[in-house]
Length: 311
Image 1 (cartoon, rainbow, N blue to C red):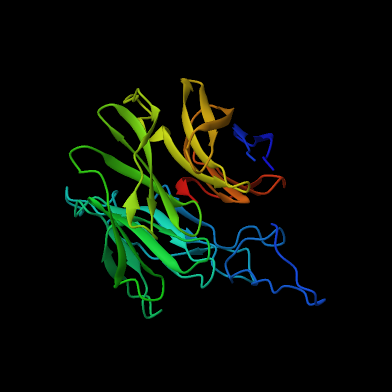
Image 2: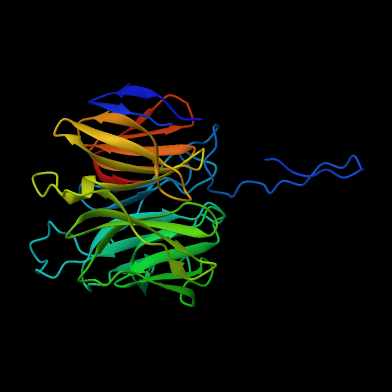
């Protein structure tokens, strides 16, 4: 079911939105319990992560609390007078719904990006090549973009890459968003000289589908290219993207996962800094830095602080 349009404090935002066989016995099919950091209607914040305007990472990674935890500075502080020109700045965060492990992506030195993770749970960060870390719906696999490759590994052993998918050449396309859309596929959005595209990589086949163009224009003005691209996947398994309509309005697009053809559209008033949708939970950072999240068709919840990204 899709979610409706809801006004939020400080901004007007749009909120988007099995069968099985039976045997002759009366036994009930087993259902895997949700992971420790899987959001629920009772605890919709667990598993959430955000990056403040000071580029500090905040995570809601306690299954028994709605109080966030702010991590120590990861990467460079872009506001520090001691920071040089070669910055490594946090960009996105992934939290495993199964184990609550945290992976922080940073760019852009080196050019392939870096993903930080606390392997030994001792507050000391280890690093992996690649950025834009995203975790599969079952919480077990980590994917990250490393220059011209998508690298997939297990969450428990992220140093060992198990699947590599070749991405478009770096001089052809810039990838800036990633999201698992099911247990096998990772959607990626980026831009080329022709406009904005979405590609889908398959872990099973180790291949990349031909890109689907979602915009043939790129606005390099104040809000930049990054307003066009992937939002994620909704609770009905539609792939959701955002696109320009006018300078005051953004189009939200719902696409069939198999073809990425348009299924329907909605509109979003104004600009947003980030908008991420993972199943039933949606997370939005408005243009003024206000963070709002909602679960299913529940009421939007505004969280304290100002942010540049959340998901």
